[in-house]
Image (tube, rainbow, N blue to C red):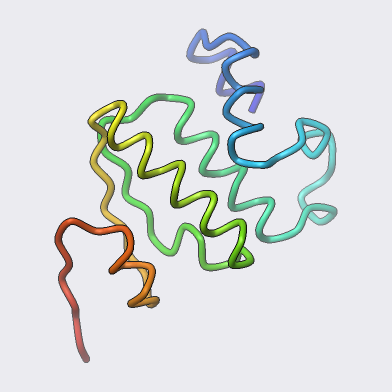
Length: 111
């Protein structure tokens, strides 16, 4: 996370604010990847991407490893960012209920 902030001139306060909104403790960043849960790694990865304030986010199973409560919180954050920033999100998911709750438009692919 520090590397993204340094490389792109992003203040650490902004990173901390986003970490809090993603329900991630900045202390997790001091741990080795093996000492962090899959859900925590996923939220850290999303935080890193969102720090750059993208106009478009391709989210491939972005919440698949999160528990239902955290998944809901992350999806609400993404919805808010879409509204506030005008950010587009292409959400790839196997969860039809998640797609229904998130998407303005949906495409279902079948094998």
